[in-house]
Length: 124
Length: 161
Image (tube, rainbow over all chains, first blue to last red; front, side):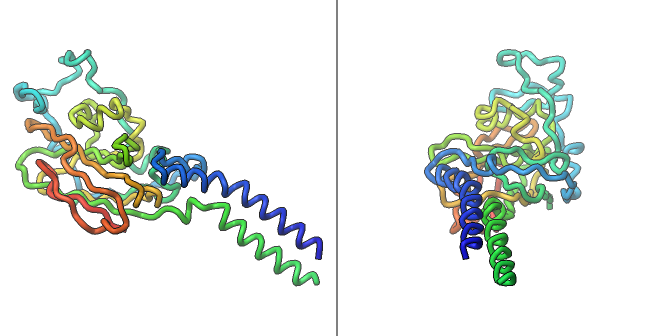
């Protein structure tokens, strides 16, 4: 009788050690804090490209071109050869390294995503 | 007695296994649908991101448009992130054409809903005006499936479980 009881107590303690941080993080997010719990529970999974990308080639057809006149404030100029004419603001073009496309890496660990499936995208 | 002990052990193992992975039970796939107006221009860059109940940036959900040098035209998103592409690693796709509809299915935490979070869309297209916060919708259980109207590029935005 004592042995099962001991086992039960041990497993309950183990569960509490794992679950309490997760619950407290969830409460903190519900009270307006940043959504953190998933960060603390992040589990590295094997990357498997499950992305379903469909027929959108807009990046080629509709991408900002190299010709055009400079627009006014708040307007995107078609002349966006920023590598040469990158002299606006403080000289920053915001043209740093490109982000990894969906399906190539896991989503950012910002607390918004679970550790589940990779994003799926479709353009109709 | 051994049998009853085994049963007890199995039950304990099952309980601890379930409780040890609460994240799996606290997330769900959410499809965010962004329909664009027929604005007659080139493909639009769209930044989908979330703010908390205080209006503070909480994180990005999707970036439509792959060239980081144009992200500065997504004003509110850029201001919040400084154009940090690490914020959109793994959640970046192509820009979206005029009149098209973007559907993105994401595995999101339940904690995002009914907690004051709001989904926003910044939009911009070549030779057209930038449109920060073109559309926004509160993330609630009751709001699922109910489209919210956009201002300039976005016709409507909605989410469904």
